[in-house]
Structures are given as structure tokens and as C-alpha cells.
Amino acid sequence: MTNVETQTHNTECNTGVHTDHLCYMISQGFHISDEQEFKALIDKPEFKCNRCGRTAKSGENLCVPAHL
Image (cartoon, rainbow, N blue to C red):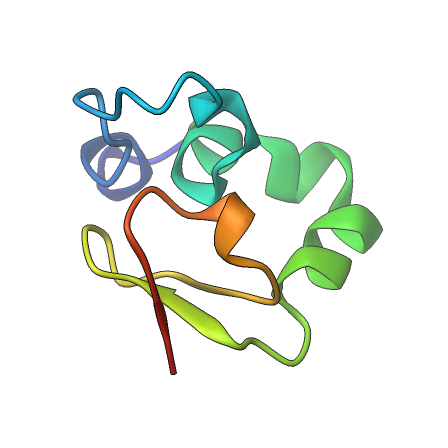
């Protein structure tokens, strides 16, 4: 895990499901340990996080989702 990945992890997210968000999953190495599942979450993105800028297929995987 790099410092950039750690810095984009939203420690202030209070949705109760932060462990489902890409910033958290990446901070835990999910994109490396389960690359195929990670790719499925980001393939053909429809949402962008207004907090970290990551994109995802589902808004449920972002802290502050907005439609693209």
C-alpha cells in the first residue's frame, strides 16, 4: 500500500458501510488480493466519488457518490 492510497481513505465517512467503499477496500489491498472482483466494481463506471474522485459502477461503493 502506498501513501497515496492511505491518504485517499476517507476516515470521516460515517455511512455505516464504509467497508463497502472503494477507498477503504483499496487501503486494505483489495485491488491486489482480488483483482478480478475489483475490476468488476469499477468496470463501466456510472458514479464518481465527490470525496476521493474514484469511479465505480455502483454509488454504493463510494463515500459521496454522484452520477457521471
